Amino acid sequence: MQRVAVRHVKVKPRCAVLTMLKRLDKIRFRGPRTRDDFPDLAESPPASDNECSDDMQLKPRSALRDTDDVLRDPAGSGSPTMAAAIQDFQRSESDRLNEVKGHLEIALLEKHFLQEELRKLREETNVDSLRQELERERSKRIDLEQKMNDVLKTRLEDSPPQPPRKQQSPSNNGTADKQQKEVWSSRLQKWLYERFGVYIEDFRFQPEESTVEAEEPLSAKRLTENMRRLKRGARPVTNFLRNLSALSNWHSVYTSAIAFIIYMNAAWHGWAIPMFLFLAILRLSLNYLIARGWRIQWSIVPEVSEPMEPPKEDLTVSEKFQLVLDVAQKAQNLFGKMADVLEKIKNLFMWVQPESTRKLYICLWVAFITSCVLPYKLMGFMIGLYAGIKFFIIDFLFKSCPKLRDKYDTPYIVWNSLPTDPQLKERTNANVSRRVQPVVSRSSLATVPCGVSREEETGRSHSTKKGAFHEIFNLPESERPLAVCENGWRCCLINRDRKMPTDYIRNGVLYVTENYLCFESSSSRSSSSKKNKVIKLVDITDIQKYKVLSVLPGSGMGISIATPSTQKPLVFGAMIHRDEAFEAIFTQYMKIMTTTKPPASAEL
Image (cartoon, rainbow, N blue to C red; front, side, top):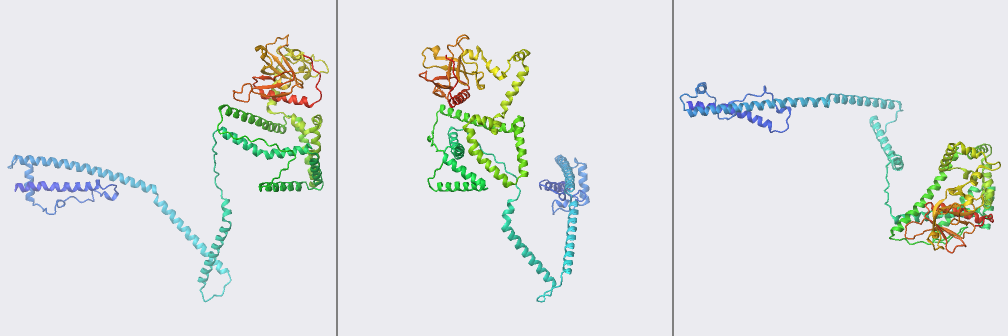
């Protein structure tokens, strides 16, 4: 009996504990859980002995009493080994109970946290507010349907009754009419979209896409190709301007006379604009025939065919450097001319030079009053006649007689008198330097004799570092350096007719006057002018840019001047501002050659 009691004691708590462990394992390894997965402890039924095994039966109370007695007196009548086993079993059962207790506490905490998360989710979703908004929308829809039904009823009541056709009910007629109207409206919309939908889509506003063009890398071959393309593209424009200039200059007397008569006749009868339109149509017709293979060439000035240089595949380093220098020089000159034109226009409208702007202001007022008083037909007639006379007669006289142009050509005078920004800066600097001059210089200027202007006095008293200019070169007092080279250009004179090294190369400064080209040697003394060089501009037979050493890249830094008195041309080399000096000398040389006999010169 004692053994049986002990066996019952072992089985009962073990079944209850195992049942709780199974439930906890199910809860733990089930994965994500909801609130329903955690039943309340009050709702969970207590573990019974039958959950362990279906074959287990209830034990009588006598057996329980025996078991209690055995537990109270483990060292009873049984063996000592049995008592030790019972104690170990009690310890293991207590450990398991503590573990189950810990699992239950963890489950309760997880349940509490999950309830909090569920409450937060319900607050965030605002299910109640969404339901209220849905109910409002439903009520609005119902109201709109009622209003539509009322409007349809009123329209049906106001419309005259129509006799029923084929014994159809009025409700069926109304629905058929509605369906027919819907069909016609859908067809009309489809037709309109097919006809005008493409045009409507064009007016749809879209954000502008910013496209960045990829820049090509610098290449000598590409640079030369672009230069040739620019030259070919600008050729028609330059030919047109050259033909206009030839018409105005009466290069071909017969052609200019015929053009003048035709234009004046058209302007007299008011056909100037139709004549220009007809000329444009004629030009396009000729271009069409040329494109079809006809050989039609008409030009007042004969075109000069330039030799086409074959493109070089591989350029040497010096050729590439020379190409870059040439392009940079052309770009510099072109940008300089464009900047001068834009700055002059800006200064004309900004009253920088009031005398020139005042003339434009008066002309605009006269043109405005004339346009308000005279009819447009008369104004067109007057403008056409004036343009023909100005283009064919006045411009020809002004180009042929420069002195007449300098006196009476008002647009030419105004345009040349307009200053650029660098010129304005030089004027301001000159004014500031004049204000800073000491009182002694003012007293010396006050001693200028009567009848002599300040410019003449300053020109006459112009001197170099070694003395007066006309005394050093034995020239008349009226000869003075031009405004471009007041300080001269530093250079070296190479006289290839001399064999002595001291006479072959000389360092010094080059000046140009109205009639002479003067070279002041830096090694000459102030009292001697043997090493200085004076050349009459009239005696020059050839002037061109020169490159001293062909091995060096670039176009050179020298100017060669040929005269009858020298076997080989004189070379002025190592000039930093070679292009500026060449332009000044060549311009003055052409001016002297086009005028009459130059003034007498002093013998050297």
